[in-house]
Image (cartoon, rainbow, N blue to C red; front, side, top):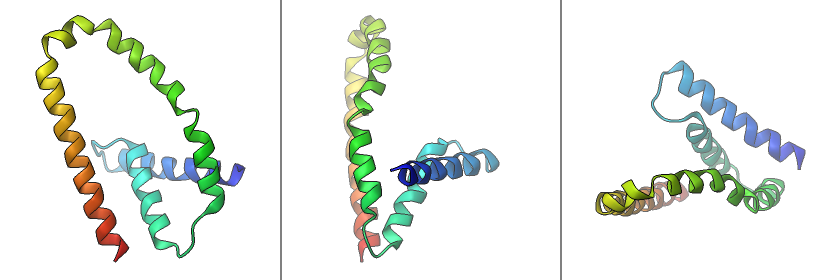
Amino acid sequence: MMNSLIKLLLFQALGEAVAYELSLPIPGPVIGMMFLFFHLLARDTEDQSLTTFSTRFLGYMTLLFVPAAVGIMLHMERIAKEWIPITVALTSSTAVSIAITAFVVRRFRK
């Protein structure tokens, strides 16, 4: 379990270092997730300990959304005024993300 946590933190640190050194506008953890994704694609077998740890860890992820939800509630009046652009932006960005993810996974699975 500890090895899996260390592996996740190392990929995050690697992503942070790359983002910092190259002055990229992409957050370091996102770059780290890409590195982890490609690392897992390159392996022939599934990393069972990482799967087990990630499944347990995901159970606690909802706690991280509480501060964001409180922040949204503070700006409810503005959200009510601008709900159409917000809805369009969220819907289109979700669709684009799903399409790109499907393309990348299909491309690297061949």
